[in-house]
Image (cartoon, rainbow, N blue to C red; front, side, top):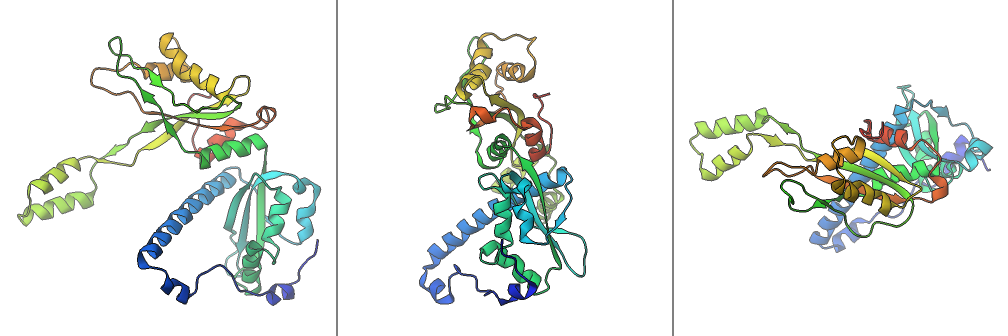
Length: 329
C-alpha cells in the first residue's frame, strides 16, 4: 500500500468538484433553487442525526482512539474483512482533546478498505483530512472501531433506516375489546422485527407562551381566535415519539408468522396471566368506553437465517436507542 509523506499531502490539488458556480446558480429559477436547498438541508439534517447516533454508540462502549501512523495499519488481517462501526477523530496543537470528524457503520464494505479511503488523497474523504493536516488545522488524526456481525449491522439498519408502520385496530367488539389489523406485505422470510408504542408527553406551558398571553391581555387585543389558541396551549404537547419495547428474531418462523402470533392470536386466547410482549399487546386491546388503545407500531428487516444467531442483537439495539427494551428481559 503506497504511503504519503507530509509533502505529498501538500502537493495534491485542493479543488473540490461538484459544486455549482455563481453563473450556474443564476441560471436556476428561484423556486427550483429554493426547493433544492430545502431538499439538501433535509438530507444533511438526516445524515447529521445518523452520525450523531453512531457517535453515541461508539461513546457508549468506551473505545480507545488509535493514532493513525501509516496506511499499512489498515491492511492488517484483523481489519481486512471485518464489518464495524468506526469513527475518525482529530486534535490540534492547541487542544489535545480528540474530537469526532466522522462516524459510520461499515456494513457493506470491509473496515480496512473503508478506512483506507479516508486516508487516501485520491479519494474525496481522504483529501479533506490530508488538507487539514497539511494546513496545520489539525495535529494528529485518530480512528476507533467496534467490530459487528452482519446481523448486528442489519439491526442498526432496522433502527436508523427503516420507518415505523402503524398498526390499525378495529372498532370495539364484544363490549370493550378491539382487534389489531396487521398490514399486508409482511415478508414470509426470516429477519428482525421491532414493536413499539407511541408516547405523548404533556408539559406545562412555557414561560414564553404565558408571557405572550399576559402581554396580549394587557393591551386589550384578545379576540376569539386568540382565546381559542391560548386555550389549546394551556398544555403544550411535545412531538410524539415511538418507544421501542421489543426486538424479535424470526429465525425458526418467518417475520409474518411471528408478528401474526403477537397481534392476532392473543386477542382470541387472551389470559390475564400473560406477561411480556404478548400480555402487553393483549391488555392494550381492552379499552374503556370512549378511550382508544395505545398506538402500536412495527418495523422489520429481512436477514438471512444463517446470520441471525450471531452477535448480541438486543444489547446492540439497546445501545443504539439508549434505553432497555421493556419486554426482552
